[in-house]
Amino acid sequence: MAAAQSQTFHWQFKSPPQAIWPLLADTVRFNEAAGLPRYDVSETLQDDGTVLFEGAMKRGPLTVTWREIPTNWVTGRWFEHRREFRNGPLRDMTARLVLTAEDGGRACHADYTLTATPANLLGRLILKAGFFSSTAKTFATLAVDADRFAGDASPQPFSFRAPTPSPQTRRHVSELVARIEAGPHGHGLARRLADHLLTAQEADLIHLRPLALARDWQVEERAVIELCLEAVRAGLLIMRWDLLCPRCRVPKAAVEALDGLPQGAHCDTCNIDYGRDFSRNVELSFAPAPAVRPLGAGEHCLFGPMSTPHVWVQRTLAAGQSLTEACDLPPGRYVLRTLEAGPEFEMALEDGAALPEVVLGEDSVSADVAGRPGQVILRNGAARPLTAIVEERRWVRDALTADRVTAIQAFRDLFSDQVLRPGDEVSVARIALLFTDLRRSTDLYGRIGDAAAYHLVRDHFAFIGAIVRRHNGAVVKTIGDAVMAAFAAPADAVAAGLAVQREVAAFNAGEQEPVAIKLGVHEGPCIAVTLNGRLDYFGTTVNMAARLQGKSEGGDLVLSAVVSEDHGVTPLLDGLDCINETTNLKGFDVPVAFRRIRL
Image (cartoon, rainbow, N blue to C red; front, side, top):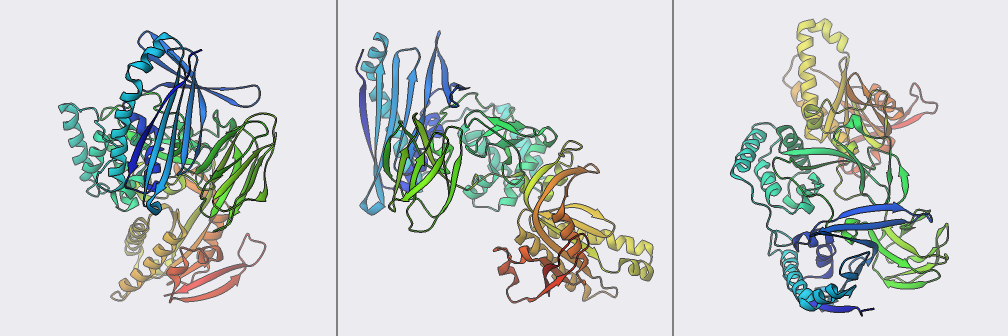
């Protein structure tokens, strides 16, 4: 059997490890920029509950197949990726990156080691003929790119040449840009979006996320969300609803419309079945329309640290093995589990505290005695290899979850047909609801007449709707003279309520027939349903918000206790006249505490 051959490449960086790691550990982007070909992936459940990952790539007349070994890594420090080939010129290949801080953490260097074992004469010839030297040259260029990007000297992580669009495509895209900007949702960003679609790496376009674009462009999130929605209507983008796995956070089911959203999905990678929740794992993502830029099929890398950035440590241990890894975990909530299907252990890590030893059993994950700050201790007590995972209990940073996008007015205006199947219902872990009503509207009709009152009510709806939209919300429906609006964040609902009362007060200053609006806000879980052809909400949270509006006197704002105590709401109430009250509400067994805000 031929011996393994290896070579280590050394790269020096002027930037700190925390700036370089997200670039080198983003193996999908790195491999695409390096020009490595895509490959197909299959996942097969084994009898012992593990999952076999296999890759396949056609090279000339031969289809090379291999086993993908789950990547090991410690965030910010090192990763190791290995393939074991079934056929072809190589028996195996391993890539290992080690990142080391220098100059007090202000700079760093990387050691990237490639190891390969030839399987036959062709493999020996490939390795001898410059495999390592050509790889070293390509990867060294990308390392320079990464350092320039981390130091703000380059606008993109890696040098990349996108396919050149035809003149017809360029004209088509320009026409779409003009169409988008002619509407109310372009915000002067349509050309920038189009250029991004034509020039970016495919890694940025397969799951295009408006929140990530907003952060990179340093513009308001709602503006980019509205831009992407309008771009779908125009034909520049396509959109899809992704049902994300709660463990690996990767979409395992995707549909074009809400009425096709499945009740749940199965993740082959994690070997679990899971359900859906608008607030937790239903995401709206985008991609270029095929006529604008078709994307390739297959994977540039199946496993990679930045594919699951919430995972800080992923490490395979042999049966009975124990090891210690240096790792600086920030404070927060963590989940200790295995890559294989099984139980998990959740815990909170305080600032400066040490993570307890992570103990893996045959059917258990537990935390033993505390270790030391700056390290992670792992122990496999099972009789088989297991892969330990230490992950933050936070959701995908830039996921535009369904609870948020369905509470944006532009979505309801542009995609009123995006509703659930009749009789279907989806959980929403958290939504803020604002109910409004005109005080004594019956008296108003009697005083000024039906026609004048009708126009006043219509103007009032437009007035409320404009304020709701400005504060990142959406009008769900009107009921008589009342409005029901939804917001993803309680602070936006309260800010909208305060704006309503302040602007009504300014309006009344010059009117002979002043109006008074009653407002109530509550937030909590509910279910999303389709009622009367529109996406609506149902449940106790909805009833509570409506009942609290009934306690408003007009000119004030009534907030439930949970809303008034929200960390985003409390700063909005500073300096305002706030009165704590308790009342009995119809349909609720115990007295309800609320806060009345007078302006």
